[in-house]
Amino acid sequence: MNAQIPHSAQASAQANAALVEGVLQGQRRALAKSITLVESSREDHRQQAQALLTALLPHAGGSLRLGISGVPGVGKSTFIEALGLYLIEQHQKRVAVLAVDPSSSVSGGSILGDKTRMELLSQQTAAFIRPSPSAGSLGGVAEKTRETMLLCEAAGFDVLIIETVGVGQSETAVASMTDMFCLLQLPNAGDDLQGIKKGIMELADMVVVNKADTDKVATARACAQIKTALHMLRPASPNWTVPVLKLSALKKDGIDQFWQNVQSFYDTMHARGELQERRHRQARSWMWELVDSGLRQRFRAHPRVQALLTRSEHDVTAGLLPPALAARQLLDALDSPPTG
Ligand code: GDP
Image 1 (cartoon, rainbow, N blue to C red):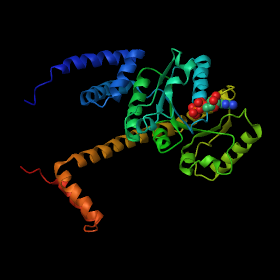
Image 2 (cartoon, rainbow, N blue to C red):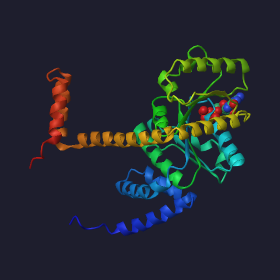
Image 3 (cartoon, helix red, strand yellow):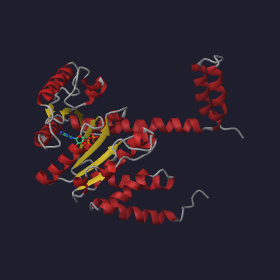
Image 4 (cartoon, protein in one colour):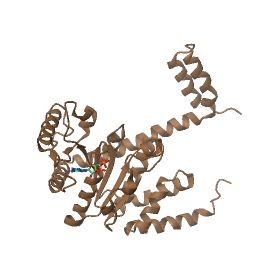
């Protein structure tokens, strides 16, 4: 019975072959359809998506992966639009913009409000803009974005821009899927450096003070403060000094300097083998993240664990059972053979 192949399997293999072909040819419809498959939570779609990704993986990896983060209102969409248009017009690049915004699934509304943003860029045939998947947890959103990145690479986009909001953990997720992570800041830094957490600052490969057109003095002060702060941190790479740039996304002033720094980072890191090492590390930790979350899911779904769980939680809460012993019993339940 288990040798029976679902009759839809052949049809699904053919559909996949057509999608693979379409994505490789850079067809937008095929790409959008593939992303929809990747984002679906239906089990048959998941399987189809994995087959698709496996087929396309050898064709991925050729893009420059750029992470952009900053608090709402700092000017991310204005900047990404300006950068995207600059890359298309001046450098004949194809640009894909993806977003990681876990707020869209928590609150039902997206902080990145993708629909009305980047209108000029979205009209370009050389651009592809995809809003954040609303997949529940940050882990879910990040996983789907990583897979979508591979699809976009197979579709031949030269630059992938992954945007995220400067709230919560999403920066760490985006830094762990990109080659270069850039932090956008405002000129009115103040003494607290806009609450930039040390951990986030340590992730940055470049810091940009946007809206430099609004207040030159404040911008210069913010740049100096950020440089001082960076000086006190351990550099992410011994081969790279994190640049602090001033820029006006609105006036499109400083975009070329930004791009020069991206290229210089890329060349430096590539020459030292650091870029490849970063990507290898990211791929391994992505695998382990999925193993960890898969184990947790299986653990909670296991019938013997479920039978014990309520009681264990109650006893631990009531102080009747040491947490370590409770954990041990639950883990042992996972190993014991199912009864009857
Ligand atoms: P996001 O929430 O980070 O995506 O920010 P937006 O790109 O939506 O920008 C928020 C506001 O700041 C908008 O009204 C923009 O026009 C404005 N803005 C963005 N960049 C600049 C800039 O360089 N200078 C000035 N003066 N305003 C800017």
